Image 1 (cartoon, rainbow, N blue to C red):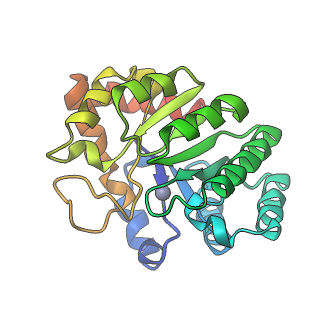
Image 2: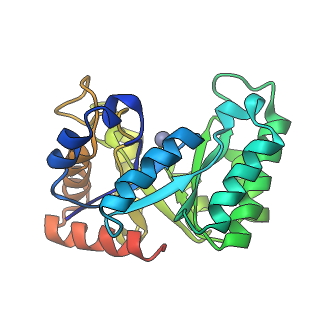
Length: 249
Ligand SMILES: [Zn+2]
């Protein structure tokens, strides 16, 4: 009944406990597995082979890795697209948080990958950190397919800009945190037919498990928080999020 629109099931800490993690996520009807390199992509294919209806695969070169990305990396990604092995391209985007000295290269990488997604007709999953203005202006210019704003943590004003595009706003564990005023306001204001839920596991574990390793089953707590904020029944929210997610593919 739940949807996890962004999880890293192929990271060692989750992949090594694969059977447990799968057993725990019985109530998760759909999950999108995010891949940040080729090894993870190969692992994601294993999950998908086991349950092709339930698992979607996203792969893209992350802005944080921009300095290691060569033409070869883009060719590998293109190959997966050509073989129709991906459901989404991502996560891609701009991240000026750790190091902003490679802004131009990050922008170039983002634009290249947006064009690849356009050509393949696949949605994109966007990572945007301390780079709102640049990311949005590139998306407005280059994105021609639906956009998922992953782990949205911007302001209400930023969200309004995002909603002007063909997009979904995906909320994660931070909406359950004590100091989540800004995030809560965004959930409140976001139309229900534009919302997705995610864990970004193994990171960002929601309350009441904050501090432990995150896994897809905890998307339940993100979803319940959305219900609480929007004053809607769990079933209503779950079925709407499921519709939103499936509308992308
Ligand atoms: Zn992620």
